[in-house]
Length: 123
Image (cartoon, rainbow, N blue to C red):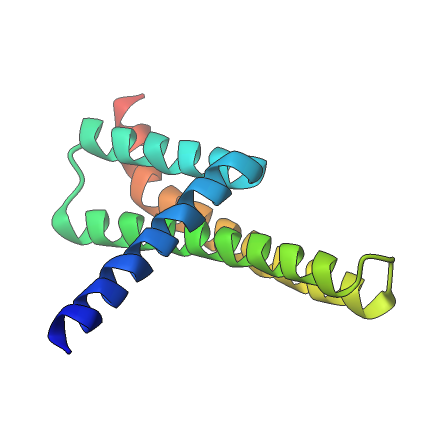
C-alpha cells in the first residue's frame, strides 16, 4: 500500500513539472514574467535588501507567476470548451487576464516601495 501511495505522489510531481514545461514552451507571458522575477531577484541581491523585503519580493514574484500560470490554464480550458468565440468564454479569459494584470501591478508597487528609496539614494 505505501509504495503505491509513494508512486502516486512521485507521478503527481512529474505532472507538475510537465506543467512547468508547458508554461515555459507555450506561455510567452509566463517567460516574460519569469524574466522579470529573475531581474527582481538580481536587483534585490545587488541592493542587499532585508529579509522582510526578500520575503515580500519573493511572494510578489510567486503571486505573479502563479496567477499567470492559472490564466494560461484557464485559457487552454476555455479554448477546449468553447472553440468558437462566445461572450462567456471571452469574459472568462478577460477575467483571468485581469487577475494576472492586478497581481503584476501590485507586485510592481511592492518593487517600487522596496527598490525606490534604495535606488534614489544611489543617485
